[in-house]
Amino acid sequence: MTSSVVQTPLKRVIGPKLLVLFVVGDILGTGIYATTGKVAGKVGGALWLPFLIGFLVAILTAASYVELVGKYPRAAGAALYTQKAFKVPFLTFIVAFMVMSSGLSSASAAARAFSGDYLAEFVSLPPTLVAIVFVLALAALNLRGVSESVKANVVLTLVELTGLLVVLGFGAWAVLHGEGDPSRLTDFQASGTGTAALSGVLGATALAFFAFVGFEDSVNMAEETEDPHRTFPRAIFLGVALTGTVYVLVAVVSSLLVDHETLAASSGPLLEVVKAAGAVFPPALFALIALFAVTNSALINMMMASRLVYGMANERVLPKAMGKVLPHRRTPVAGIVFTALLAVALVSTGEIEGLGDTTSFLLLCVFAVVNVAVLVLRRDRVGHEHFRTPTALPVLGAITSLVLASPLAERSADVYVRAGILLVVGIALWGVNRLFLRRAERAEDAERTEGAGGAAGTEGAGRTGQG
Image (tube, rainbow, N blue to C red):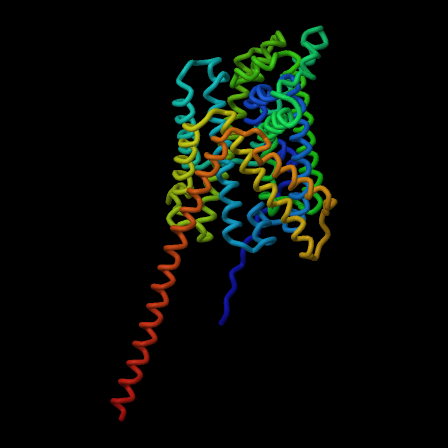
């Protein structure tokens, strides 16, 4: 008698409008609230340009994700596409671990943003200590279990978006009343000329790209989305376009009202913009909105990273012990502890700029792989219609991702060191896991051999007795 395991499908409850809000909410957060000033420090008053270029690069890679999620509407993302395209388990693991690490570096950047000038509106505390306590508090909340609904996500998204609309509204009001300096919009502070200036712009773009990460997470909702083949193209493109437009406008207003030196020196740059606008909007209230935004971003990233570790442990690509679940809470305790320790270590190694740049670097490497995977998987036909991006887009997406991930982007050495150490940790865990798996396989083979030998001996003894 044969038996089959029937998997219960996930409930498809996310329609087109809710998916757009999910995409927007996933992108909004730490990036624009915390790194605007650091981008200005790299490029000067023309900080709108890196955000515009970052938006265009995001659209290229978003097109690849749209094709792939329409082709394979399952909740696995970049790791699934990598495995289908290249069928190299180690490469699939590296991609998955990079995605996990990018979530941790993003959460660490959010922790640094939380502990900076936004919090200083209320209390003055040691930033590094606050950032570490912030990470541990998120880990505790993660361990307890966070019950979230689609409606809650809509509320969080609207609150985050409100903060940016405050910047745009009061900034526009100030500009219309003669405030601001339009000459700043064409003020490039990139050192040198020619290649040096290009490197400065590329470096600013690579950092600005941190503000656009998040749209790739939405493909993990494919199994809970109504008619994903049709819903995802509109939702992802519209979501990226909306956030990109808001980001460029926020960058323009920020540059008009505040000089780039002041922005670069602040860990709460948008708070400086609100103050410069001379608005009646209470700075403390805006700081609270910003704190809420970066907290939400950090929590989502910490949850994603811990669940990814849990999933990899269940798939036996990480040690089985890392898949341990807390009995009563049913939360991935080993994954939460592991990711929290890594996040604490990351918080201790850098500031917002370095941690944000580490996030961008890791995801740009992943995006390069995904863009190539689209082209490789063109030979894999599926039995349903799906969006197909023009071939030029993934080609350009792969090239631009690699350029922004390369040393041409004038990225500091500590970013490569930090990312390299994270990968070494992952590879070490992969190696330990492979060692244990091989030992387990040898033990099983030995047991089978002994069992077969014992059975043969018993059979031989029976024949002797009969004789």
